[in-house]
Length: 181
Image 1 (spheres, helix red, strand yellow):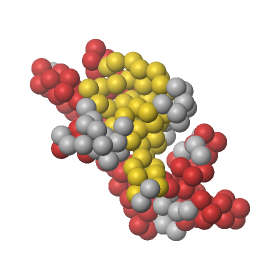
Image 2 (cartoon, rainbow, N blue to C red):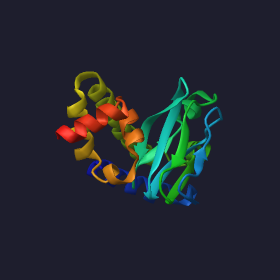
Image 3 (cartoon, rainbow, N blue to C red):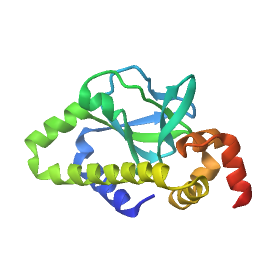
């Protein structure tokens, strides 16, 4: 986990604490269903969440959220339309739910905190760009090695199928990459 993002997330929790709602999810619980309107961001305090979508009947992992990570159906939140993304708990998880409408109202009343929200969004954007560039420019071995460095705990806590789809490869390719490591 990126320490800068962790520090910014802790700052976000401090600033928005009055409008954050603690929620617990059991392993396997659906946090948000696909094809629904999303209205929240989820800040992971403990556990592990993943967002995914379906393509030709196969679920594709789009994002993992580890402690101090943030996940939500941003496509739905910003466009106010149904999201393709599902969010599930891969472990028993404690999260803080931040309703987007409440956040907007809070920032309207407290504009001095917009900088914190912007910095978190910038870090999330950079994380997305890094992932996209990895899929575009790195081979399977390089993507896996980068994943291991970035998310060392996920190797034991997420299924190989979820990791493989996140890395844009089949489970068989991931198994070959892991053997050759």
